[in-house]
Length: 145
Image (cartoon, rainbow, N blue to C red; front, side):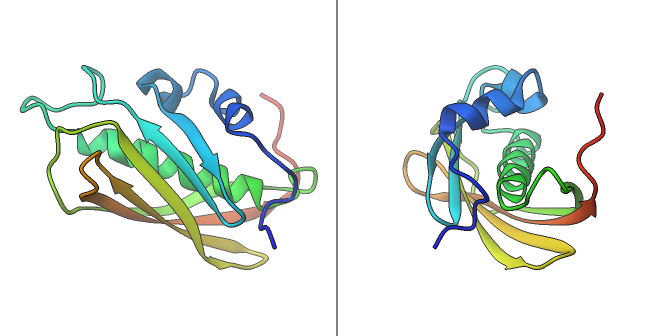
């Protein structure tokens, strides 16, 4: 059984990002499972630190984006929307071997909040970072911009 309220494609998820920070950094969604989402982040001048390793802030943007997108996929967006409450990112391993691949899965989902875990690996399959993201579910569709 799937968590998602409708069928999504990676291309649709990429379009949802528009000109956001994730889009500017070159993040793209690569796969969707019944309760998980994967995305990748290239290593380039926008995503590395002064030593050539992936920048922790870029990994945080990757984690937040994948988790908040998953949370959005799991709700009926005609009656509610999600907002971030907390993001804790733990950097376990330095890496300059990209792209970084993030896999997000649910830890807890209820009517008022979601908790998502995001594991980020490099191309050598090292766990570079992992994150825990808590999202609040707010009644009412997203207000227009």
